[in-house]
Length: 135
Image 1 (tube, rainbow, N blue to C red):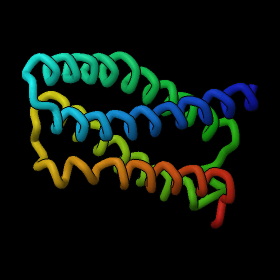
Image 2 (cartoon, rainbow, N blue to C red):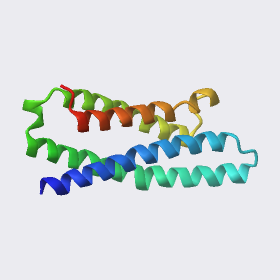
Image 3 (cartoon, rainbow, N blue to C red):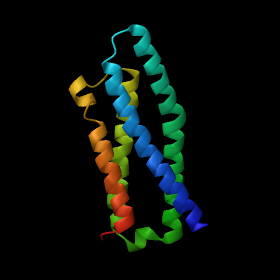
Image 4 (cartoon, rainbow, N blue to C red):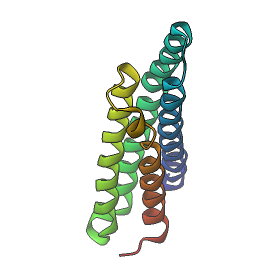
């Protein structure tokens, strides 16, 4: 059963980071569109992806991660999990910011263009912590 949740958690984590990364890039692409119809169409697709793909996959990731943490008793044995949980909170905040950026352009273009960089770095850091378990 542990292997099932580990696989589920790994796949869903990749999908969360990938969806956020792609969504932040599409926000940048949408900011470059000129025609109102194109902007509205892109915004509609972004809203649907964020609502119907990002949030359900995020829930699967969090639930499978909690099950894994309980099954492996990781909170009693490893300190790296607390750093990973901190990175998770930052990733969730970036996801909320991404959702707000999709609804209304809350970030200036230059900052909207940089959101995908921390998403990538935080995702890479979380994967590093989970695989290497440095401390």
